[in-house]
Length: 225
Image 1: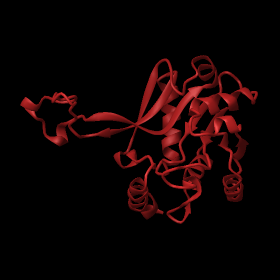
Image 2 (image 1 turned 60 degrees about the horizontal axis):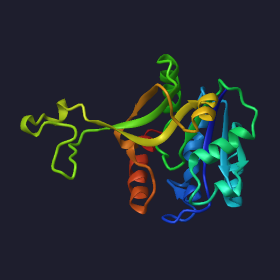
Image 3 (image 1 turned 60 degrees about the vertical axis):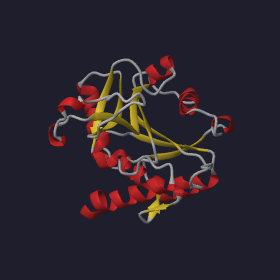
C-alpha cells in the first residue's frame, strides 16, 4: 500500500491558519489533496492535524481517499519535528513494513498528480531506499570566502549549457515504513532524486512566497484547465 501523509498545524507565526487560507480560490491544503486523490499510485491519504478548523475544512472536501488523523498535542507544537509526528502516526497504525510512506507538504501546492505517479515509478525502477524532490537551479553559487561552489568563474559557461545545481524543494519524500522506523528519518539509504519543474521551487512560508506561488499556479497549472 502507498500511503500519503500530510502534517498540518493550526499554528503559523508567519501566515495565520495558512494551511486553510484561500489560495487561488481554494484552501491551500486542497490543492495537494486533490493531486493525491487523482493519483493512481496513492491508496490512502492522511492529514495529521491538531486543529478543529482544519479537520472541518478537510472533511468538507469529500475526497474518498482522505482521512483526518488527530495528532498528539506534544507533536503539534513549534518545537516538534516532522519525524516525531510521522513516527507517532506509524506507531499507532498497523502498516506493513514494505508499505510506502509519502511525506507530503501542503505548502507546496504546485505539486501535481503526475509528480506523485512519476516519482513512485522512478523510486521503484531505481530500487531506491528513499526519494526526495528537487528542482534544478541554474544559478551560480558562492560561499562567504569568495569561492565559487558550482562553477569555474575563469571559464564561465552559458546558462543554456549549464547543468545547474539540484535544490531540495521539500514538496514530498518517499520511504518505506520499515526504513522510517529503523532510521527515524524521512530519507535514508540509497536516495533517488525526482527533479520537478523549476517553477515548483516555492515552499510557502512567508507572504512573498504566497504571492509568487499564486502567480505560478495561475500561469502554469490553472491556465490549462
